[in-house]
Image (tube, rainbow, N blue to C red; front, side, top):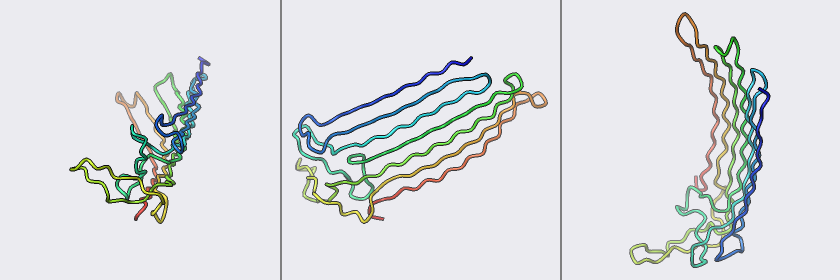
Length: 173
């Protein structure tokens, strides 16, 4: 009772073949614990990913399909909160959780090229520019409430309310 744990994680990375524009940073913090009949979890994280390069130091296209975006040159943020309450000698539980997540790609080399030919082992080069009318990305918000009771007339009961709002933006649509 009364125990909690916290963590902080940080990361940094880059291409060993091409350090320009390849730097990536990640940072997250979380805590979880219990106080009496209440337990909780909280996590927040963010990242900024740079451009991707192959083993020869050649830049990879940020959006390999030219329509849906990718993970190169993206910024993301996430926050999660969860609280649970146990009642009636742990036979009943009420739990709340919420999640917010967003990711956006703003590529400097998001141009489309048709110069590659996989059959001839010719790679598709990354083209400078961003030809997307809007930046591809994802925005999510989820909220959940759950109630459980382990002894309702000799049986168990579980009820859940869930809300989700998801927005996905494709660069060409």
